[in-house]
Amino acid sequence: MARLRWTSGGVLPDGGETSMSEPIFKSIFGSAWDDLPPVIRKHYANRPYTNDKVIVEGILDTMCGGPIKAFSWLFWLLGGIPPHTEQNVPVTVNFDSARDTKAFHFNRIFHFKRVKPYCFRSRMIQIKGNDVVEIMRFGIGWRMNYVWEDGRVKLKHKGYMANLFGHSIPVPLTIFMGEGYAEEIPVDDDHFDMFVHMTHPWWGKFYEYRGRFKVIKEA
Image (tube, rainbow, N blue to C red; front, side):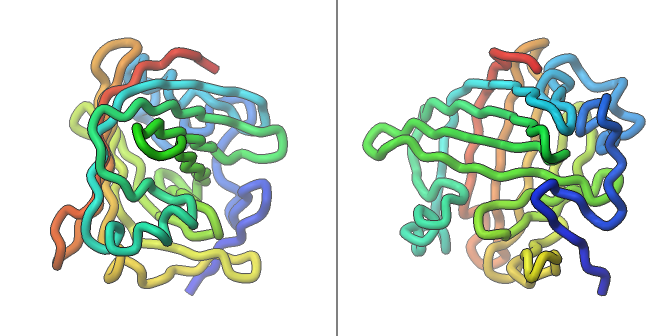
């Protein structure tokens, strides 16, 4: 079984395919990049090894059930997806680059009504082509295929990974955590709709957040 090397700079064995002068996601979307609507290209405009920043703001509805609700205290502790059910939650997302890495950083802030602002941070690293891993706190990663299909961005589940002694290895969490899936749908030049959900053969859809974002700062 091949092992992938994770470093602080997000470098994997094949070195990725991203040119330093082009957006991180250009090689991930491949030939579809030139056909992407303006709002999606703004969303993914960050270049590697820079201080590029894109900011979006929106309103989300969140739904939490199944194992995440049962172990919500653990998810609060781990700083992963917010284990909370609420409607009309203001959310700010900073998409950040950094001088020492080619990773694409998601810094999300959920402004819930009765709990303090919740920060959910992760970073995405290209493995090869449209094969991407989103690394969360403590080195757990969600692996996915990133595609432009049917007029929208789709994130298709490929399993989970963990960082062990500087290498990533597949871990059989799908049987416990189910499968992740997400879509981003362009609305106009500045807005896009999105949803993320997790499903399991036993519990069905047990986690979701969905809503609309506006790009308020471009890289």
